[in-house]
Structure formats: structure tokens, C-alpha cells
Length: 335
Image (cartoon, rainbow, N blue to C red):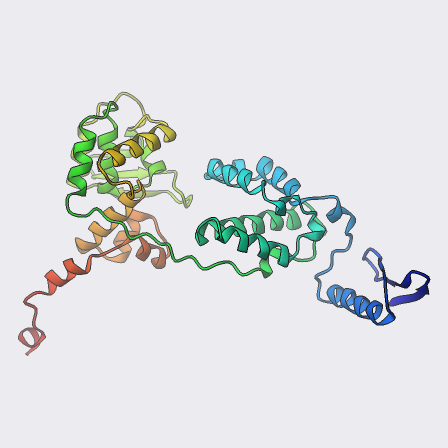
């Protein structure tokens, strides 16, 4: 129940509720005091008011980022990229806010400002990361926050799914650029990516022990989804693997950053600056689809459990489909 008292400086209002920290404020008019009291009581009734705001006033979003980086991020396979993203985000004024001031309006303002600087997909990832940090703090670290303010913010729609495939002549340009590289493993790793649809990290973690030439398969124990899978190997993939000298337990003993820099040099030399290494995965899955593999068969290779995600990686060329339909006649087939 709210208590309102007239004072020289205005109307002093205090809201007390069992189990909650007392809320008090001085406002200019009694009507303002009544409205403020009703709002605080309504927030408590809706479960949107923290039981104690002292901890929220003493904790900033940057503090939560610090702990998350120490305790949660290192356990993730994407630890390096997530840590890099969080370090960049910490430069924003949003991270200097106390959690008591971390309102949906403040997060929406951050979203709108970031949309002027980066792509919507980047902003979506950042908003999701902030939400995850706050959620972990609420559920596991005892932060007395009744609800997650990030959950009330609309994330921007992202329409930047890539459909880049190797066009006519692109592979020849890559092959030509690969003839002058110093690392002999660069050519087979790029060609094997096209033949297997393996991610860069999966290729780098591939071991000779996981390859079974008799069954024409390769076992991938560590994947992005955390679910191991075994993929089939094409004739071309087997030939590529046979051409590699076994100098280590891993097929490609290359550091991830070394591969990244080498790939950038090769694609630039080939005049394909818009081609990303991950586009080779799109190319491979699209080729498998054009061979007539079904969605369940494609999912065995890609590791996708959601058909929607698999569709994002499979890009069939309309011109190729048109050639398949050339000369087709429903009347001739079915009368």
C-alpha cells in the first residue's frame, strides 16, 4: 500500500510490499505521486519489479560481461569469436549502464544506433548475446531481476542469407591461384571443402584415424552443433586424401588463422574477393542436391536437423533446372 505525505519540497510517496525493497520518491503534485505509486505496484503485481534494486544499481552490464567471459564463454566452441564480439560491444555506452537502468528503451536505442553501422544479422547476434548474458545472471548468478528487459525488444529482421556459388570459371581461377601457394596443404583443403561440405573447423580437426577408406566415410566427432556425424566420401574426395602426405595425426595440421589469411590471399589473387570460404559449403551441398540426394541424405552430410536451415545452404540454379525440364511433356508421359 502506498503512503503519500505532503512536504515542503513536494509530495513524498513510499511504496512498501512484503519481500520487496521499499520504493520512495518525491514528486511535484499529489496526482504525480499517486500515478507513480500505481505504476510501481503494477510492476510488482506483474512480476516485473526486482525485489532489491541495490544490487542492480551496483552492477553494470559490463560487469556481467566480465563474468560471462570468465565463466561461460570459454566453455563454448565459438569462444574466440564470442569473446571478440563482446570486447567490441563493451565499448558501447550501453555496457556502462547499471542493470537498474537497463530498460527496453535503452536496448532499443542501442539496436537502432548499431543498425546504422552494421548489418541486421550482426545486430541480431549482439541482441541475442546481451539477452543470454542477462538471462544467465538472473537464473544462475542470483541477480535480483524480475524479468529480462532484452526479451521485450524486437530484434531486426535479417535478409542477408548468402547464395554465392562457384560460377563458370571460378574454380579454374582458384586452381590457377593455388599453383603458386607455398603451403602444399592449401589446395587439398579447399578442394576437399567443395567435395565434403565440411566447415572450416571440421576440416582442420579431421584426423587420419577418423577416415575409413574401405567404407568411404569420414567421422567428424567435433561439430558446430555438438552432435558427431559420419559423412560419405566421393571419388574425388578419396583422391584428394590419397594425395596428402601423412605427416601428422591430423589431415591438415594448419592453424585456423593461417588458413584464413592464406584463403584471403588465394581468393584475391583469383579475383574472387566476394567469395568466402564458407561459400564452398554452400557449393558442395548444392552439388549434392543436384545429384538427386534427398533432404534426409543431405542432412547426413551437412549435419542440419532443421530442413529450413538446410534449404539456406542448398542453392539450385534455375537455369540448370530449366535444362532438366527441356523436352519434358506431361501429355507424352501420362497421355
